[in-house]
Image 1 (tube, rainbow, N blue to C red):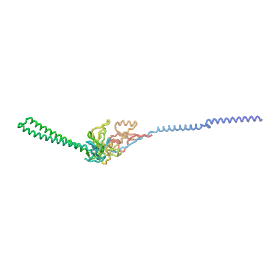
Image 2: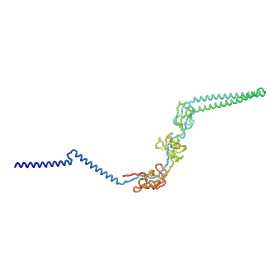
Image 3: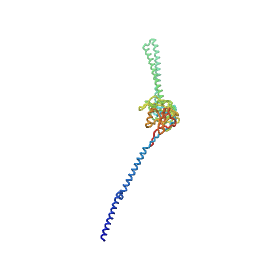
Image 4: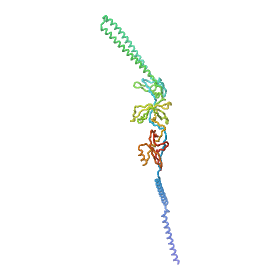
Length: 423
């Protein structure tokens, strides 16, 4: 009996061990399936979750794009209003500010400058001494001319005395010839002496006149050593200093520049040949200079010159404009931008130029443009975002607004100037 019991207990223990091994094998399979207990298990789960989220985002994006594509587009337009305005047609040009009358003061004599009596911007009057040239050489020429005049005068007296002596000799020879004391040859010789004496007297008198002219010229040159103003004005430039030597023999040396009146000045501008037909004398103009930005000065066209100017194959014509410079703000040589008002239309119905340039897109708009042809027109927005053209007849333009001569437009009407799309 004890032996049998022992055998039975051993078999039971064997069966329990087999069951335990089976449970352990099943647990191992579950662990392998779930990945629990391994070092990379959680990383693999995180990767799967991220991939799932990316997939969801892609699907959402595709759905949003499809909805956006299916949504109808709404077209809106930029507009500007018709209004009444003053339109001025201008011709633009550039030029320089100049004095109405400018005098270049020079010297006709040579020598050393002894004194300069004026300086820059100084007012001068007619006859005022400006520059003095050292008169020493000129005074020497005057003395020489006077001496030559005295010699010529003595020669005249000598010739006159010779003529008187020849006349006395001829009278005596004629008396002797009447008594046949002298020959006819002696009488002819006496008469020839008279002719020579008269010629000598004429020559001496001529030399005396030459000497007198030389003296007069020397005195004139001496007078020119003092240079005086010929106008009432102001000194613009001074090109000489005391002690400087000037030479007036070959060309006149420029010493000073005088402007007659800086309160009345002029503009000289070059008008392009394409614009010259719109510019007329007496037209009004405005101009600006860099020295006073934003400030406009008034001027008037005084003269259009016919002589053409060609610079790099560009032909232009010079126009002279006058203006009042009572405040003396503007100075000679300033560069001015001039706008000549060639035409002015006050209080006219005007449309923006952008509305005239606007061209809508689309099949319907293309068909409407073909029907209109070359007729100028503007566009207005109708019901449902459609556009409707309005033919107009236009007049002058100032570059921003254009005059409307006829057409079904009225003030404050909104005209389309550009297209703007909203998604």
